[in-house]
Length: 319
Ligand code: UDP
Ligand code: MG
Image (cartoon, rainbow, N blue to C red):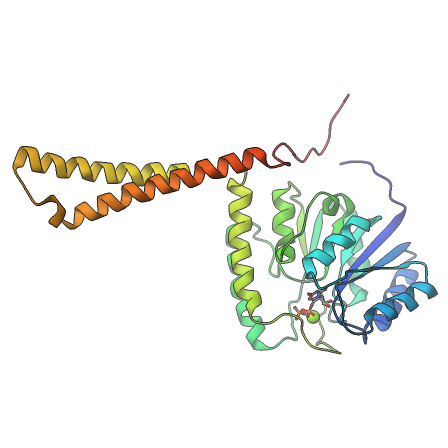
């Protein structure tokens, strides 16, 4: 563990998109909780290209209180981008993310800080009792089950909970892009941060406005899970995936071709091309070559990636 010192106890990173009604209430509530616990803190409000008055509300709040900081995107880039921008700025020893819509309660802050200080890298909220429509809660269960299976993080029930806490070092060493905010625990685990815990948190119905995500979240979420799994396992060595499959497929096809040839020349079984096996063998050889080529191309791309030799160093000595 590194012994960095941080200027603040706590950074709250809050991505928001058209949430003008709730911001003031949220910031006041955070101040109340943090002051009661004597936390020095900053609130990073990241306006993800809102079309309503969110930004002018943020400016007013920031003018009234120096601990409130705002970042405004020129257009809507998505929640992951907003989180990433907030993470870049965060100075607190503990970094907490929360949604801006008052569905997550600031009263959870002290408990989360406590859990990070006792040694966890990441603590994820679990909305055990949720206040969301059934069209969302049922697919979410499926999504969480699949993510647990694929990531090997068995102790989390609710990967996509907006309320999470991190040790500062964790968020400075991971990158959240695309729509990967659903998988931050997975990204953190693959970056080598293993102490991942869960805390049951209060959840409330949305007070103002409407949800910013539709049902397409589940399709996108599933595709993201596939690509994040693939990239983390084979991103640096694509040939090990495609090459293996390609070689296997080619050898099967080649074996079939040999068998057909032997049949023809030694056992006088003619009409090779009338046999279904012939087409299967040909297909397997062509597919195998293609897969092999894909692996080869992937390898050339990986070789040129600027971060091909970037590794996570947790400690060093006498360097
Ligand atoms: N959000 C964002 N950019 C977007 C969509 C959402 O910053 O493109 C924010 C949103 O303002 C909220 C949080 O992400 O603070 C969670 O969104 P929402 O409450 O709509 O999601 P849900 O609670 O329905 O999962
Ligand atoms: Mg919400």
